[in-house]
Length: 173
Image (cartoon, one colour):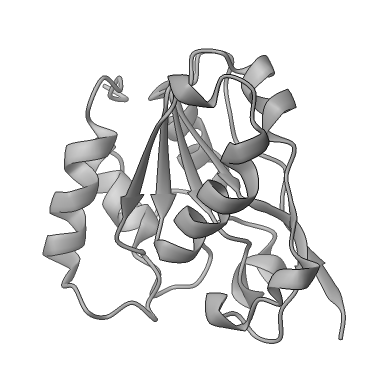
């Protein structure tokens, strides 16, 4: 089975909040874009919170995140995973990204918002124990924006995300 790899982070020098997924799904990998699955609520949620149209071209959505001081990345640099479900990640093959270097480059980041339970679990277990200055970070588990996580409605997901993303984050207006 082939090893899959994550994308480079989306971040601007003044980033304050980091949103973490686990690793891109098949649709995202094929499109070379974060959260490319049409039923993933990520862009609709961030657009609603930060005041931009989630149907903007991908490059423009990225600029809107950067202007709002929101960074996006994945916990894993690579892993073996058949399909797109987080539950299928071969944990023994999982290699985390270099968060020590990333956070040194973006020292204003204090809040880490994990997009779902797998991202949170991987970050807390595989990254935080070895991360310098981990105590300066507030790590929050948010409901997954994935279409596979149907336990919550879009409105409920939006409410949970709004509380965390808007806190001390600059809007795009």
